[in-house]
Image (cartoon, rainbow, N blue to C red; front, side):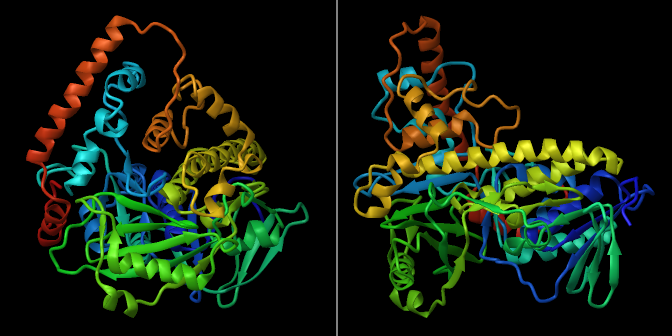
Length: 529
């Protein structure tokens, strides 16, 4: 029976979403040191994680530190590598160009208008390379910190690439051994309801009834609680974003000392795009595509060709491993319905992770949304059932807004592309596929650069600076409003541009390669890093 006080939290489903959520709640509420709250995670022995290798945002550093994880242990046990942003190749006309979406904000962002002096005086220089030294670090394969830099501290802002198949078990060991999370491995037989409609208990095959006051659905695409039990529908976004399939492979490095990319590589193809994520011992590579525009057989041919021959030239691009290695790989097919739940928190049940929604891997928002969800649930954990509906309404409003903004930001990548080599790209630019708010914003951005006035919430999922990187990286050139630029702004912007160049040179000289730093962390257990 549901009690008036919220004392028992049950998370159904493990993986990255379940264990991150369990860890945040247990760490924040000091389970079991402070009596009053129990956290239990029920995990089916028959469900294995997708486990294809995942990208994260810099917020993951804060989340891991929040739950008390050693960064060095995490890196060593999860085959993790440092990530400083994304490199987009062939997303626009011609196919040979690339641009970066780095994790660092433009240097001086918020202090000066950088767009006007860039367009006027430096239009031949890629925007990201003028306002951030991080593209230089990525092109040269540099790590974001030095050997002596403390854990979670950064010289250049960074996140991680990680092996999702190892990340969940790593978090499980930490949560059960150090945070007091109760772990039950069992099949869910059925879900019992109260007369009120609240969930009363999860009935398992071997452990019987498990009661709680709050249930968190982390059961993945099946959405066992919110989707199946409560029937909360999925709001499809396939009219805007077409991709519904992926083929994923694990690619070995050619040599043990092969460079590890400091960024996610996102390479466009005729009916989708390829992710390329460098871990310590291998690469995770996959083709995301639309089944309505590309057959599975053709998708496999495109993926194998990429693995065999690579894409593009230069230090930041992917290299091939040869036709023989590519032919021996066994791609794994993944299917998904792009969309998100109409409601995320219903009665005493809230969905986190894939059970709440999934659009596509572009820009690696999946784990970030898990982190944000877990943090809000923990921070706003209602003390009583009477307050839960108020918290749920706030949660639903916040995450409906975040999913809408995520869809718009991902759509932007396709909308401003000038590729015309297939129906896939042409249809992505059709007016009927563009969210109305994005239509209005693009009209505004033809005369004004994206700014904080366009994204007014405190915790925006993508800041205006991210729109700068994508728009201007893809060749979008605004005709800014004819307002005289203040002389002091022009001078400040030129100084900031010069500082980026100077800072880049000093960082290139001081920072080790991504591979060198990761090798050091594997060889030594230092408390200071």
